[in-house]
Amino acid sequence: MAEKSNGNRKLCIITSKGSLDMAYIPLILANSARMTGIDVELFFTFWGLDVITKKKMGGLNVATVGNPSMHPWFHIPTLMGVIPGMSAAASWMMRREIGKLDFPPVPEFVQLIIDSGANVYGCKMSMDMMKLTKDDLVDEAEVLGAMEFMELSEGAQLLLV
Amino acid sequence: MTNPILEKVEFDDDGFMIDPNAWTAEIGEAIAVREDLPLTDRHWVVINFARQEFEANDEAPTLRRITKTTDVDTKELYKLFPGGPAKKAAMVAGLGKPTGCI
Image (cartoon, rainbow over all chains, first blue to last red; front, side, top):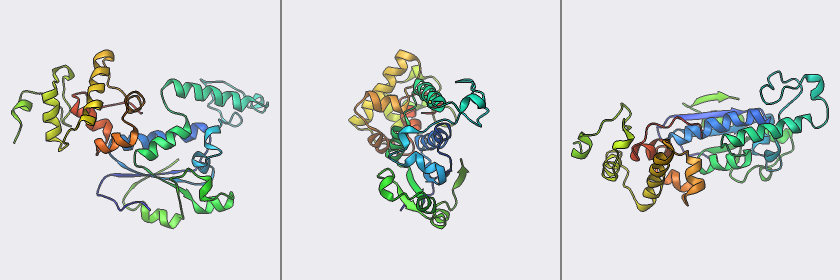
């Protein structure tokens, strides 16, 4: 369990999305917070669990269907987006662009944030639903129920992604 | 009590030096004392690298660049500069407040 608050500013981020683009939002914010000395608790729920699931975190994808904002990487009309390989191609391009900005790939980024002292939690209920156990998550992650998360986030600034 | 070395140096409201080019190692030491951060050789690995990078590129290095290029890893960097390595390392190295995202 996380240590009690030290009186520092604290940021809690709930991540509920597991697509490549949505994964970077909590990771970048958590990292920025740690870099400037803000305490961070990261709670991963529903599809967000993919971001800290060992087998999935390295292969997150961008959705090409139902995503009206593909530009400027790759403007793909929804009808074209259903063609096999489209999502993989768009994801590959996005990974390349993110790499150019010197942002690490998701697994390395998660490790970086853990090394920086942020705490990482998987949502128990979502894990039960997806048949995941603690062993499926990155080693430092802990499993937490929503009520425990309420205790943990007391007084913190909360963000839902 | 202000260190006489720091009296001649201009700082912004957050304690960052306004002119990075006016920095000397002595000033760095004095800022660290002001910040209650006793410096070790390992701190200097980070500070010297940040200065080198700044002099070469006119820009402070990102933390990721520091950990990728020097032998100081992320965990150590955070231990060396509690209270946020991006802020504290830049402050002691006389560089402006970092604005990057990584």
